[in-house]
Image (cartoon, rainbow, N blue to C red; front, side, top):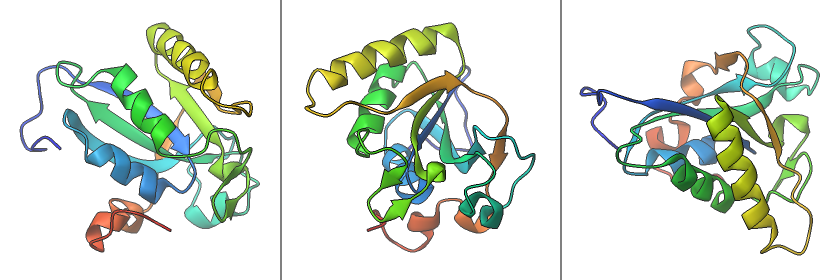
Length: 163
């Protein structure tokens, strides 16, 4: 990951949900061109939710990762490739042992251009799978950062995978 003290002149933002945000964040943090990652909650109706509230499944939010990246180094399409690789997009509201709508697969797009690339990427990925992809592609809304202890959770513990 790029040195966070020297941001490139131009960055873009991408937001993904693919199960527990700890492992998903780590998958993106390791990519060249990723300037910053933050885990949090998005896609629901509760304002400023806590982790405990999101875990109930009643907020409508997904655990998600906001990725700030340098498009001169890594493309949005490359980020999507990492997203598809990081989880099983054919399991509704579940990734491994984690079950609930907060663990759904979703791409939260920040522009029409991102939507077009995400839809094409989903179609390409679907052509390689036997089961239907359940990944939502929706407009990015408010992103509520998770509590500090969740940020870079695996890296702080010297781990690179959750399960």
